[in-house]
Image (cartoon, rainbow, N blue to C red):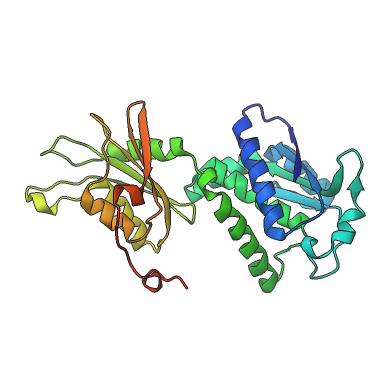
Length: 297
């Protein structure tokens, strides 16, 4: 999909985010099954400008996170993938593609919502981008059935780009912050961990020791048990930070994590040194729960 980006009052926009947004657009296009070349215009702005657009275009006197302005007049219940002839009517010779409309995203809302939901700016930006694109494809969420259909397409797309959507640096930073709370008076080896769930939420933990050494708990399992106790069952990555040398998870932690996420990316960091490896390689020939025990179909 052809993506034209314009930034307005947003000097801090990271160029790497554009590549991520392009990936989101291409993946959404593939999920919808478009066979007609398509183009969209994306404006990255702030709350003040999106507030103005809301007031002038929709009569809503407040800022929102994302706005979509489709150009294709879809019949009720019909989506872009089913009507290539309608898309062809929006052919723009300058683009060499069907122009599907505009998306406007407020970076003020992106940052605020990322902090509120406990995940990265990149993930929130991708979600709003994908949400806007599916509006341009004819999806809506006014009725419950429509909302479920649109949400399913969003999840399908986000799952495809999930590995690209999280920020390793943020996971490591959160793990380092958690390491400050380590209770390690016996080993003097503080460890912090940050576990990213598939939902986008992050859960942190530190190692907690005890005079009865066997009672001690590692940072990785502290984060995992916290997440599972709040209903999470699927995970994407975990960052583990230490102070003296790279600290890979112990065997017990590897098995505990494998129960839920054999394909987990394990990231270890110490100072400026960072390494990573899939959990399957850290625990070869591992075994985990049957899918139905994790609540999957």
